[in-house]
Image: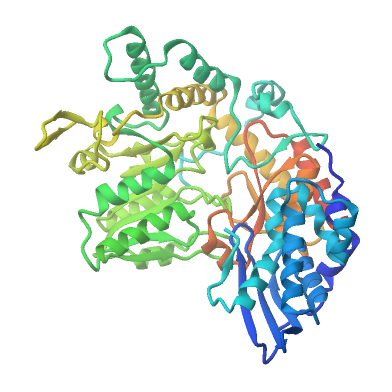
Length: 152
Length: 419
């Protein structure tokens, strides 16, 4: 099977990896969670500020592969200002589209906006966890779960 | 360093016919992502030559039967082939007796067997077990579990920034409380070849028993357990061109004899009543249940194969590849080799500045090159170097300089993508 490497390492991914947005600790965060992928050693901390049912600010720090850093960077950008219900919907859509056995159509991909750049991981089963680590960590932060999220 | 125990002799008369060898490995003929497979993940597992595949196939096609039980022809054939492999292994590692060769599922199971059947009944609270900072998790976790069970204390020999054991620190750790030392022959994450003969002599000078983890050594250097004088030596068949699910525990007969059985079941008994069991003699005492018969027969074929090529020739070829790869790596911008010991096996572990090993692994895979990325089940090593992971290329008899050239091209491609 031939896959184009460029579909995985799109310019936007390389850019967000090199210049991650919303990177760094958020003082006075309402929720904090830690995510860990023991397979590759990716670690990230997520800091969430909530304001009346909305994510008013969202930061992350840690280290990881290009896919995991870019995914966290894109996620924090996409969710700022969203309500918790909207964030939940976005998580479900994203998770479904990167893991579903059927490739998403252009319409579905469009729902994801910039996050669609991460759909390239579909061709690399071992890398799906890199893209979803930040989302699982967010879920844990919003649920107030104190145990670190592990992908294994 | 260790005299005739670890031999890395470059002898141009004995350079391998690598093309001929490659023809024995059907898996190497395939293309991955449209490129000829360059398999550089041999420290994880080696590929299997036709001779091994056919030995397993032949067993299942013509004489599949359980061993040590039946009086029928097939059972006798299977028993003879299985026991013949035991004697091949005895010869291969220069063990004094075939009774000292115990079949296990792998290195991990062999270490657990020693921890539970040898050490556990012996250890008292406050006794000490010495391991090192460069061990694979399989030579750390069983000892941690044992320490938890017995109250024994685990100590670790530190390493320097080249990835070499600090023998002065080891000498200081050894003492009257040391009961057992468990150290690796060759580091899977760094490639360091440890001076095991000296390490063993030092342990014995303090009255300690020593286990050597030979998982990364067995396919690359001549192992002579009598010259080494180690008490236990363990390795896996699948890193020696043999089937997965096979492994060997060598132990001195005197020690094995005194040990209670580990697992109970069929084959490890002489007589069973509902009240009591008379256990079998060595080596069967430690081989409860039907073993991996086809795997052991395949391992015998693998040992034949390696012996025919000559371990010295393989070692020389791999040393050449390692030198070539190390030199070539010097030409890759931002590449840092992790593990720069003076005596190294065919392992090149490295980082590329600004590029995570997992991304390197994916990009190399696209070029048809298989490497390992991650912590290599040696997280304390990663911690020593403050790294989450490295990329590791590891060599076997069938690898070529051309494959290393492709690896370096692949690394340049990584730099381009992340430029």
